Image 1 (cartoon, rainbow, N blue to C red):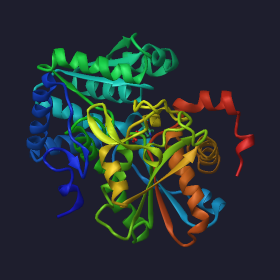
Image 2: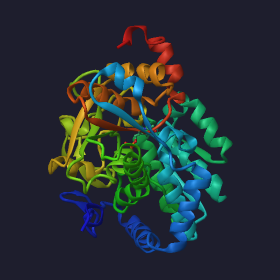
Image 3: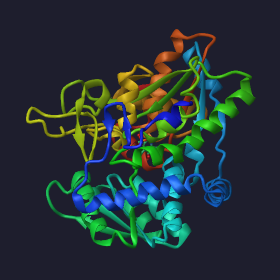
Image 4: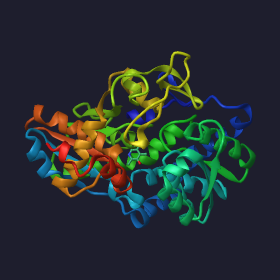
Length: 403
Ligand SMILES: *Cc1c(COP(=O)(O)O)cnc(C)c1O
């Protein structure tokens, strides 16, 4: 039996990680979602509609590009990019948001509820809601609302209601609590849509399955281009959805080495990075077991990354498991290495990448010189339009980051 069919088990465990630790009132609702998903995932009308959406709305398949100029510049391995930045709305997130919204439609729900940090998940979900003519309620901390103005505007244009969260630190953690409470009150007509391979079962499995299209496409495209499988496959890891998507195409192939790249931020001290797998310990966060970065009181630690989509003190349970069994190698890229990759891909390939994705590119650039004659396939999870003001205001046009 293939890896994807074996994991997770019925209770949502990947080895010791995963599960669902919920307030009692939410247990029946998550059970309802899990059962509906198992039924619908093999339903031919669901599969056909998702395929139609992938092709005619999202613009899939996204291409695989041979980054010839960058490869030549680095000397060594040939670097290839899976262009999820060309997926509609500019990143891989729409792959699972369209899946979750379609599930909601099949369950007869009228509304999508979620939290968002920097706003990327909120925009993708609002996009899905608009497509299906559903209501959408996005909970967002007031601090993030002030910081991420363009994404707030996008969500509103797409017809979503943005609910400001004004308690506690007014950021992602409080937004999660607020969204959970709102869901509890509206669970009959609404579905909660998680933004990565995190959260209580069945979300890590469902989101992975919806993202697996990335890996299945990339495997066939790479074969068609080169007649071979890639030697190395690289993706950045925040919660871990774009990485699980790409890895899904290669987990049963023992010859392909897999790498997850975490943000090493400004350094190895707690609070300076968000390298959860590198420095974390088994624990529980937001209703599931995974590796967690904790402070000396055992609470989720403050985290930092130049890429706001990667700064989470937990990580998907499946990544925690794949690390423990040694199936995937987890490394990291610092803010500085990431900026170097951001400028290099812009200048040498004509692609302005998201800062999240730039972590994966940075890792491939570090690897390339040591692997001449081999190939590295990188998930370019999103485009960098959202990051250009921040990057140029703080670091100029890359004079200090040339190769
Ligand atoms: C949100 C985001 C990520 C991080 O999420 P994962 O679940 O780890 O994939 C990575 N890249 C981009 C472009 C994003 O928007």
